[in-house]
Amino acid sequence: MKKINKFILLLSLIIYALPIQARVYTGLEVFVYKYLNSVKGKRIGLITNRTGRDARGKSTIDILYASPKVNLVALFAPEHGIRGDVKAGDFVKGGVDKKTGLPIYSLYGGIDHKPTKEDLNKIDILIYDIQDVGARPYTYIWHMAECMKAIAENGKTMIILDRPSPAGAKVIDGPINEQKYISFIGLYQIPYVYGMTVGELAHYLNVEEKIKAKLYVVPMLNYRRGMAWNQTGLPWIAPSPNIPTPASAYCFATTGALGELGLVGLGGGTNYAFQIITGNWLKPKYSAAALNNYKLPGVKFIPIKFKYKSGYLSKYGINAVWIKVTNPSTYRPVTTEIAILCHLRNIYPREFLKIFKNKERINAFNKAIGNDTILKLIRKGVGYKSIVNTWKNDLIRFNAKRRKYLIYK
Image 1 (spheres, rainbow, N blue to C red):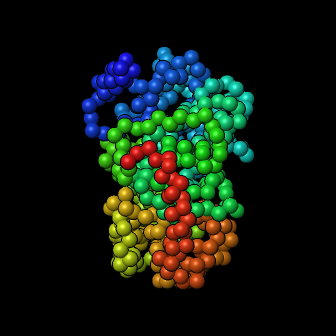
Image 2 (cartoon, rainbow, N blue to C red):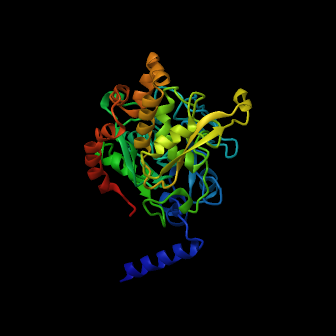
Image 3 (tube, rainbow, N blue to C red):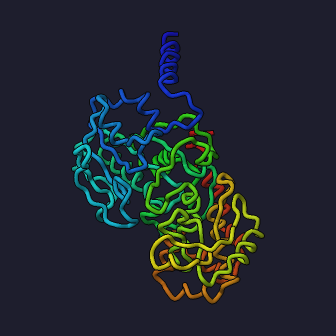
């Protein structure tokens, strides 16, 4: 009875401490209100970036550094850097955080992507707080996985502060990457779109891939599977320069690999990044109508004349089709990508077949998508539904495993 009363008292304190709003409270916010005592007296390392913030915009770094219960001693920088302003693929330097004076150790500066034994000797617990986009090639989840491996190898502890997946962590789509295409944009074999929050994925990898880290996930409050970002009540903070909006996050899994082919422009550097396909040879009205006739779930295709605000292209209106996601929880990003590619192959064969002259771009696409079969089938003129069916059974098997690690209904 005493234990029950203590639990009720603790729950009451948490409820009264949290502002009464019908919004999602991130793992960071739950951790601050409920679990700070669990790390008291421990040396804490933090892997984060500019997305590590509470709903008021205060950074995870500042929150933990200011807390008398937290001994924050080190920061670990993923791709794009601690502040999220480094371009994709660019070297990330270590150094010192100007605001706190804490040392920054780079996880994206050499041949390895995990903290060294020497760096981990300086901490007891590593906390991870980064916004994910829900697509396999986005490298933050692989930084997390590599950190989990390092934690396991060095007998440390890792805490994941969970955050919403932009499209709702409901949809599973796309092929599972083949073993020969294992890389830092697909370190383990999972679907292109894996339908889990970052905390759920951490549990999955820890068990299914036998990482065996001492791992704790702090779940969110009020999060429901299938929530679009605008339903969470949280502000959007760009996790990298070309994901400026939730809509760009939804479409990253549709056009990210497609962009490797150099066939079309994707609106990079604008608020429409990853949401459009552009090309002066493109017939926007015809292509939009043809793609809409596929009746793909959760998306509409809209013909537009797209104009960049700066640069040499700012003088011209470029033919484009806008991929407008109308329902993120039913949208199938990779299925949509295959449909777009099949359309381009069938309607613009002269432009499409040019891509096969550039082996480097073909290899980049295959690496991103996870196999070298899909592009061959598209080149042969196979329909998108037949191609999508090639990964159907793999997704059924994956989903059977995935369900064991889901935290949210």
